[in-house]
Length: 131
Length: 179
Picture 1: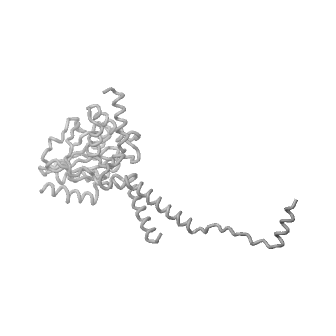
Picture 2: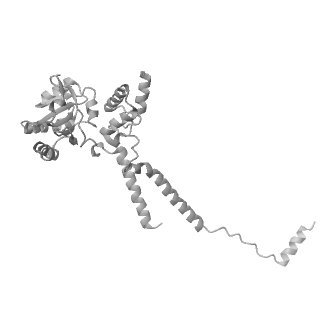
Picture 3: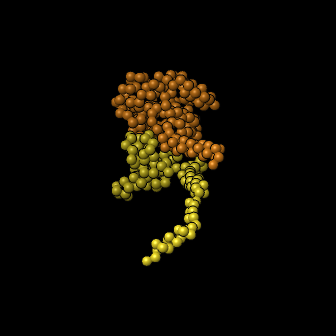
């Protein structure tokens, strides 16, 4: 494996792991000394021929789910994966219900029929329409 | 929508946002470590003071207290006297060993720190940070207790002071050494 390929694999793996001291950055983005050392540790393991999964498992075994940018889909972590869709569905349903209720409550526009034409007015119109 | 339904939705939303906040910005000190109950990594490195290689293999079968520290770490200074006191309390026990691991530091500064604050046990230098990663360290100070079977039994993030010291000695070290 050449240096470019190693760099590429280090970047791919480091982007999936979270910096443990800066919390909201990946290992790849972070400038923290610990993150730099972790990137070096990834590089060493990539050079030794370890797979991305093996390297991720090594870090996960030491820092737990906290280090994973995408927490494993198991146990209570399912909540993190499902909650946004659940919130969207519940929110959508509530919004639909409220809009429907609002539409039902709004009275339909009443079109009133004009009052019947009296005889005098009818004659006047006919007179005026005559050429 | 009834008042109860509105309240329930608010409670669920609050719980979800709290979880999200904890997950994204929570202090890792409050996250339970995954290492307690697992086999401790074997570690080795140069002795900070003598430069001689030092390996944890040498202390196999003993209760080992491992403390990660650095000369630039303020909290390490706070706990240093307690570490010396703790070593003094247990040093005569044949099955007790205490080791320091010097983390992200420069050897001259680490040596000067030990000369200034005192040193009664050995310290290994973590040359490229791999020992800290092997132990899942977030920062310094962090302290681990490894039992006679090589299993990590306790981890503490932060200085060993007051109640932490009492808990470490009474509830962790003494039972492990007497058990």
